[in-house]
Image 1 (cartoon, helix red, strand yellow):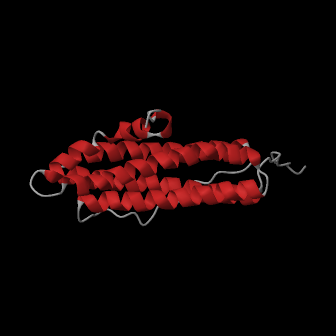
Image 2 (cartoon, rainbow, N blue to C red):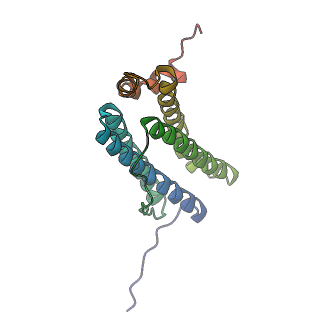
Image 3 (cartoon, rainbow, N blue to C red):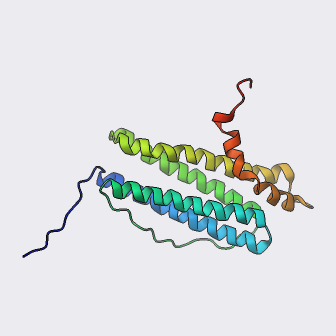
Amino acid sequence: MKKQILTPRRSITTEIETLLNQQIDMEGKSSAYYLSMASWCDTQGYVNSASFLYKHSEEERQHMLKLFGYINDAGGHALQPEIIGIKHKFKTLKEVFESILDHELEVTKSINNIVDHCFKIKDFTTFQFLQWYVTEQREEETLARRAVELFDIIGEEGIGLWTIDQEIGKLDGFAAESGPDNLDENN
């Protein structure tokens, strides 16, 4: 007697499954990239930046796991990405945060492309699911942009790098505080 393999009924197209698995790959690489950056910051004495990046590495992992759940719940198969080619050495703290901003802009572009595709094929369930990522990416970009701005505002001379590291330690609340939901109505 031949064993029958059960296949779940799918509510996700193979094309969307592929796109979301590519996003899983990107989120997994984000987590690994931030972990590597955190370790570098630790070795250089930037303890607040390291803490900030360790936390964000874990957040990126959670973003990846959220996609895993969505794909599998919809009858697809989420795939663990291979993580290779992660940079481990940086010249400056500023390079770390400039790299983060560039990376977050790429993640935003990727999310927007998937959202656009979902809208075009009328996959409104996935479109709705991805709205959380759209909002999250605005916050990620805001944090990265603000970190890079600190180098211009404070400067790196004298105690500048120490001060920047202190300020990066305070950034976690910045995006939430400056978001559109918290704008003063009188402005």
